[in-house]
Length: 176
Image (cartoon, rainbow, N blue to C red; front, side):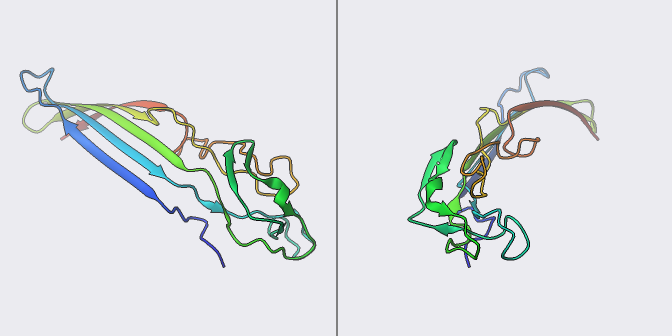
């Protein structure tokens, strides 16, 4: 019994599109600014042992904990690793008792819409994902006794999903 792997206690998302009020001519008309801001607390995760004696599957049995678990919030020691002891039985540590790092992201777009007659419109977009290049850390190592135990070794999604480093893309779209 414990919290879900996907539990995020607090999540805030806001998005907005603003049409710039310039209308004099075709060059200054049709500009828009768009922003999406996301922020959430971290997700809980299990601390496990590499022991496979109990159930035949490594990295599934929880260890014993010898005191209250406190999140320190440092990448080299997200929590106090000395509190955990690998045992050859099911340990006394509960499920998902530690919460990983939170997540913050801002995406921004500049859009130019140009009319090309009655039914055609050309749209140019410049999109900036993770505008402020904020580091969103992944969860710390969770296997007792390994070199990565309690240490954060990567960003949240290092391969281009939400939370990766800054990316810029340009797009041209013909709408009819």
